[in-house]
Image (cartoon, rainbow, N blue to C red; front, side, top):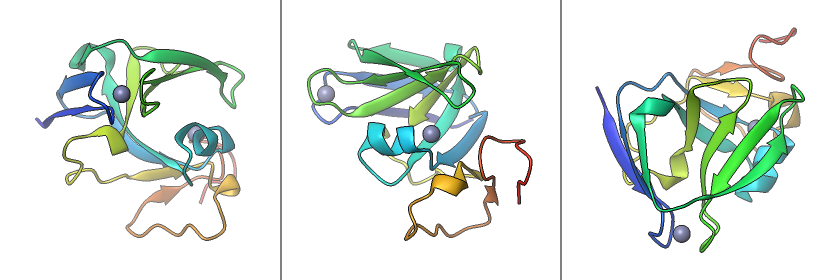
Length: 140
Ligand SMILES: [Zn+2]
Ligand SMILES: [Zn+2]
């Protein structure tokens, strides 16, 4: 079972995760682009119980494509994106892979919201690609 550690840029928020990731994926939605300040987000999905956080991340309540809440958590001191919790996925926390101390083992298996991917982004690997949410019609 992989266990990993990570934290924000300034070190005010740190975390430890123990256990098998439920999924590893990339999201190209506009809100992830804005929230990360980058072209897409990449996340490791973990059961809530597997994650221990020290420090106090700030929370922004975003609305996901489903119309349900998406809680985006970040360091209030340095602004680093750390976690996302989707109301549509109770009991699950998504850890932003850029915050990992060692992300060398991370291999995303799916890309979602490919319809809003920035045009220059073409990721390698053998990822399953979906135009929107997983399971949305038209998935390739
Ligand atoms: Zn910080
Ligand atoms: Zn997204």
